[in-house]
Length: 323
Image (cartoon, rainbow, N blue to C red; front, side):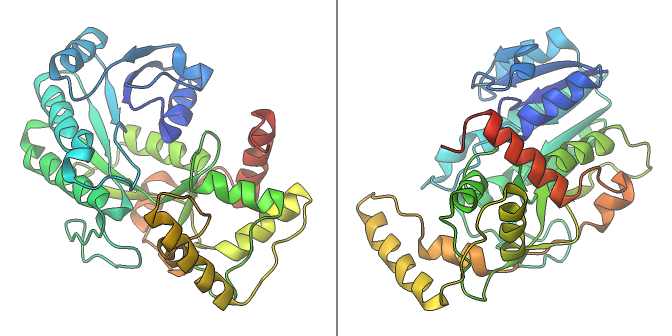
């Protein structure tokens, strides 16, 4: 198949392009950034999804059978909506191109679980409760897709959960490095339980959704991740055990509260600190999402959490990213 991936130079995109390439598909990666994964350089074009004319030409020349739209700004550092223009106007451009071209069998649009606040249980796929500008931009992106539903041959929306693994960046690359270097400490007995996803399983889920012949998939929303949910302290202990390093210590939670306040103060003067109130809340707030519909379509994932940890540690070592 001919598969076009926008944002194929990013974290999930790098893994997805490699997965499709090894499966024998013809893949085109459109991204504003150069690939870091050598597999992603096989078919790469430097394209800004905000440039509609260039985007249309790249699509038209390649004539994809399937499209996976991952390109987005995904950090939480933006302070206004225009900082996330790619998540709104970029989606408009991709939707417009996919509506015009013929022959596209299915499009997968990537959103985020942060269209709702952490810990919130939405009442349906269109129940939104974002607490960040990034989350708000993704809500607008989803609404753009819904409005264009009649013009799209077939499409699904996926919401990645907390994804980790090869080619990742902060925060979970930092999490691994802190654990492996002995600098991670359990937040007392308040560690959260969350739905995480090893990236090898996530690209498998995207593949299964993209090619699924199940009826009634058009417009469906799928969360991507692993089940059961994981307690972050148990996960940190597993990483340490597999890497044969000292398990994290467990100081009183009050220590974390004090350090988070120090981080907040330093943040006001743009000094980076490993902990802040925002990060502490993230470490201690449960966030478990329903993956039943995803597993019904995709089946069981190929990697256990322990296998994912081993593969990730090996990748970190091979890339020299443990220094």
